[in-house]
Length: 119
Image (cartoon, rainbow, N blue to C red; front, side, top):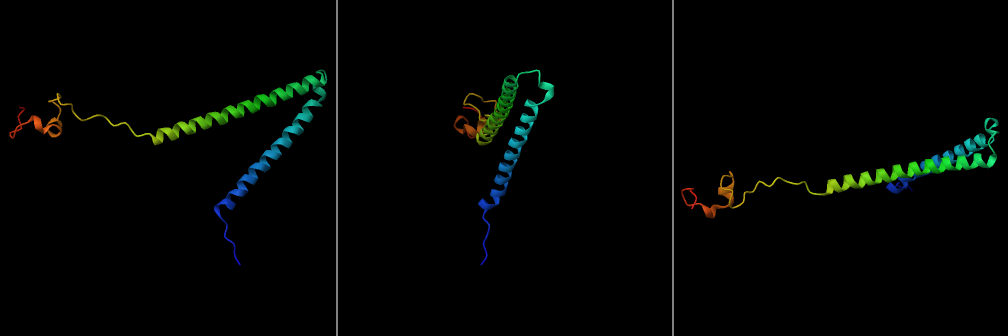
């Protein structure tokens, strides 16, 4: 008995990969935070200030990433809207009073006699 893979199953490895990347990034950030907070170079700064500073840096980086995602979302929506809207065409049709327009005779034949002269 054979099983066919569907497109939904083909998407699962990419999602699993993204989850694994997020887990590893979180572990790396946690290791970096522990190393930075317990660093002997920063021993002169009280521990609570080091922790607050590192939290502030993480919040700042999170805000920058969130703003980037919002910007990309807005750009994507703007490009989609521009693609969906109809292209403006130049208005080449003459009004009834634009007798010098080359298409006037075609658009308003009621204003011309059988010889092509204006009435």
